[in-house]
Amino acid sequence: LCLISPELRHDTLPIILINLGSQIFDAVILVPLLVAKIVDLHPVIVVLAVILGGQVLGVLGMIISIPLASAIKVFFTAFYRYMTHSH
Image (cartoon, rainbow, N blue to C red; front, side, top):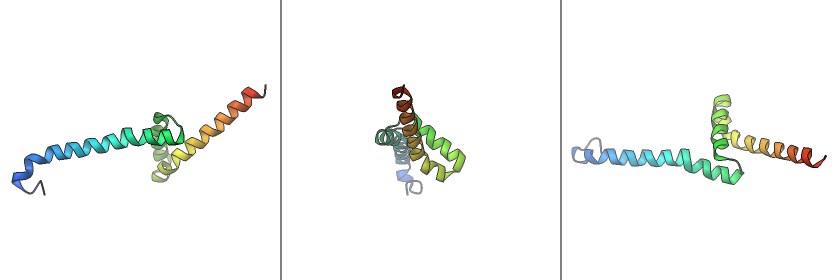
C-alpha cells in the first residue's frame, strides 16, 4: 500500500528499515542468546552449529543441529569428568 499511494511513499523507507532491523536483531542476536541459555551452549556455538547443520543437511540439519551440539557437549563433559576423576 505504501508503494502504491504517492502520499505514503515518504513513510515507506523508515518502516522497511525498522522492520529489517528488528528481524536482524531477532535472528542474529536474540534467538542465539535465548537458545544458548536454554541449552547451556555458547551463543557462537549455537550459530556455528546451525550454519554447519544447514550446510550438511539443509533445513533438517538446521533443525537437529542444536540438540546434536548439546548432546556432543554432554558427551565430552562426561568423558572429561570420567578421565579426570578416574585417575
